Image (cartoon, rainbow, N blue to C red; front, side, top):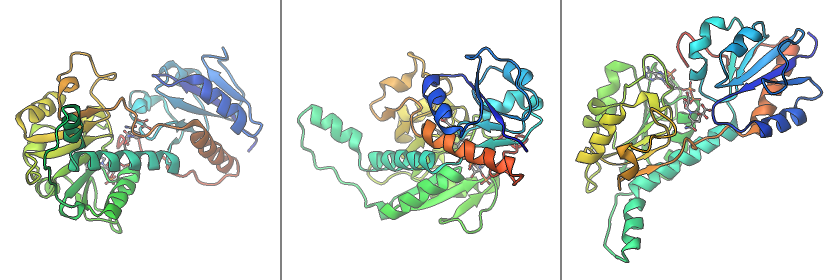
Length: 319
Ligand code: NDP
Ligand code: OXD
């Protein structure tokens, strides 16, 4: 196969110039077209389409690619155009992005377990209270969605000493920690979990799945009121009104939240003002252009050599 033209379509809040620079540097001589920036609406075969939250018409204009690349790990931005995609969909699985999520999850679990929010509030009042907390080995962390990112994060938490388990759709032989599988085992997973880390993708099955029912079934952190919650997958998986209520009533003692039903988080959300909540602006694991472009171009080279594509996505599952 001859070399592919790379068509790139980026929407949402991402800054396009760094991607233009990186594709220009990393495409190894292939033609790169940015839509709509370059004003080009037709390219010769073969070509691939690389997209992130792009306007849906790009899939009509460039409707016969060899492959569609999601420039982020999530593919929910492709759900609405699924019917238009008659090419394999490849998503980012990249050590740079994975390690960013590992950093975020470890930071968040430590922040909550070591009560850093409380220490910071005390510092502002020049207070010196005696605060105790269990050692990590006595804290049970549960990861909802132990896929690429959640498994790596869970392994790093185990190195610190945390007692980690996961909850996935299917059983996971060979996982580095016990994984509870499917709805039938959700209650048992929640009952042993004191710090719940949600890295679920947004799919028809997961939408709104994490709410009052889930929070009420968690084990409490001894001496710290309720359980803790970290949300870094997709905001759509969480019932945000029920989350705010659980934080207000102490069912949850605290939360670190990166993703929300609506982003940016609306100014009138009660979550902004909660003392026991730390909010980050969907910043857990950014797609870093040099790392992502290198992976995309490597995969295009495989395609051109006729090799099977790695990490293709089954959009009928939603992730
Ligand atoms: P993977 O596809 O590798 O993992 C998804 C996990 O979720 C799998 O363990 C899967 O189970 C589980 N899962 C899916 N549906 C269900 C369900 N109905 N019930 C129980 N478990 C379910 O994804 P990644 O780890 O690469 O990424 C996860 C998500 O993180 C992305 O989809 C994206 O939305 C989000 N993300 C957020 C970022 C941020 O900055 N906040 C950055 C990057 C990604 P099974 O193993 O059985 O298939
Ligand atoms: C992703 C994201 O899915 O940045 O990669 O949220």
